[in-house]
Image (tube, one colour):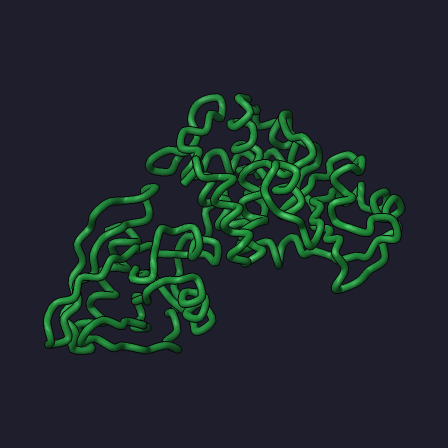
Length: 328
């Protein structure tokens, strides 16, 4: 039984134990690990058919990316109290998890249970391609695919600063998945699915793994000033500023720059930057050693999507959807 199917079974079992008849009907499978369907619940006053999406694990970005409206129920492994608030804020109709937490509202049905903790389980950790060490390699594979290139393991190691051992583990993990993500010569076989996974994993990990610093500049009075600035080697515009560079109808409130550690002193001198927790210049450590072929000035698709999701702003999310509508 797959992880998502197991989550559905446990979630409906918990509802039944609460005295609510519950069943699931699958409509389709999205990207191999996400299932859309109908959750049917009956607390004694008639069956209610609720649109639902089931996925064993859902990141903060996934709450936005997964298809849903204000009636859709999320079925997942565990929903913490903080995550319950995020689900409501992002316009879901409710949730049911596999440990007994639930938020359901329908004619004749009212359930609000939070605070039940997920059990500690042993088993395989995060896939090698989605760990802190693996994300740069997976990113390089996605970007090279988008630019019609195929990089060898040595090329991937040089571009990301990763060891050959790390690159080999990531590539092997992607080749051994079912269905395979990477084929011969490191060709990416399922780019949209892999991109979705990368965006979700990076969005969840970024605040801890690549924390930002904020600055005020004596030179750049407005974030838009950086659109005409010559950036240090390896630096890329991100988030709102990159969206503006690509023609989105937005006036950035901040300027996010992905910056390699070696280029940091140069940018600070050039902009006469001063540390300021509320400053409009945001520097986020880059996870690459050198820019891949085809990357020019702005963060490429996977990274820019993650940047915009991390802003956690409905206005910016509409711009993300418009910029990347062909990917949804």
